[in-house]
Length: 530
Image (cartoon, rainbow, N blue to C red; front, side):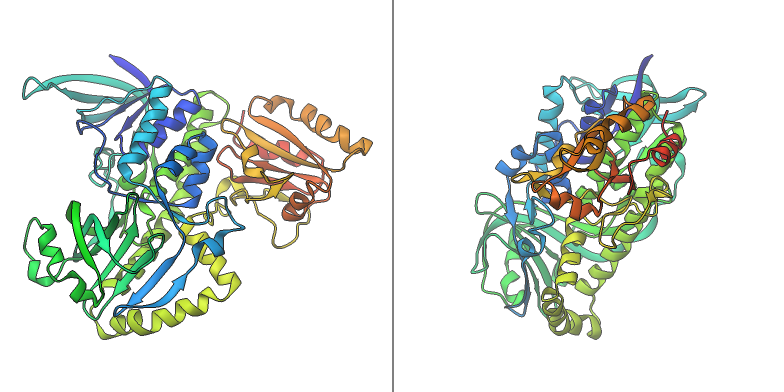
């Protein structure tokens, strides 16, 4: 019987991200996928700023930037005219290195993650289906079946795993085995998605959402002068099991009242959108991530990014428990941190989707007349436009109410400073050095703000702290940041004269202290870490 610490079921973006992260943390795993190979279709194409920051930490962001396209604005088009313009790049310029929605085909995303795994001599077991999962005293027994290309059957074997990760989509065998409800519903509207060329006057580096009295569509720029279109299938096509480009193209421009010509379709598909969410991401030796745990409408290009960040949140925790650097209770924080966001995302996208496709008079009036005025109002107010970018880009996700952020702020900090549970902010110092680049994977990072450079007490502060936290030296790296002209932006952003911030491996703030004493730090670490 083969044994592995972690069995990952599903090799889509979420499963591949989990495999990449476990590779970084030196955790052995087996990853299986029932399909014969990685997808060759474009599928999910929107990558948000927070995900690009993660890819940067992994050292692979350049591969993504070379193969995609940054959409720097969103246009709101009603009855053929641009009624509102949302300049994402302007809103996000001081918030992240990536102030846009990045257009990158899922097939390329999977390829980049596969290249990362291949570089580290890790492989995917394609054409492999999980038939059953059974709890045993020391883990999970999974019966898998590897298809034999030369016959219609295949060979079954049992895999013994300490943990099983379900990244296997909406029909997850892990979720079904655990009998975890997938509460929600399926929308009655049928949607289409396709990639094609478009003749249009709309900017080629901006997204556009288009409405008419009876229809809607969203168009996204892609590489090589192509576009992604998502829209509602017209009533005349209801009942069809498959659609063609000609079916949609026949009256597409007319139904939206736009001057636009479509051609050269390379992919088209129809589907029903859902909004569903589980009640827990973790049960016993099992975890649910990505579409196995939550699905929702395509509003906001949030789905794939959320799954990738589920994996990013779990990986370091699982690794710390596996390497006996943390207590098993740390694994319970996955649900506590990710489930509230998943619920909020499903509810928010549901409300927006209903306004987008709703057929009653109020919904039609809202999207054609009131929404453009509301967007114009929000765009012209700094607080609201920053909030809009933080929400869409997912840099605003926080775990302030999670157990790792409880009783984790000591002393006085100004109101606008980052709290425990917040993402480490994007701050440039020392001639365009990004503080986020200090946070490498595998370790917590203690950012020590020791005071004026050259001060004797300041220079010994980090050494004293390093000595006091020696029992945790394998999981914490201390970075001393003395005050100078080059670092004063950091001191201002973090609101300290002397003190420290403890940053988690996933670039979220664990705790903070406005003094250099370490009693509170040691107490905080003892909750979950060994």
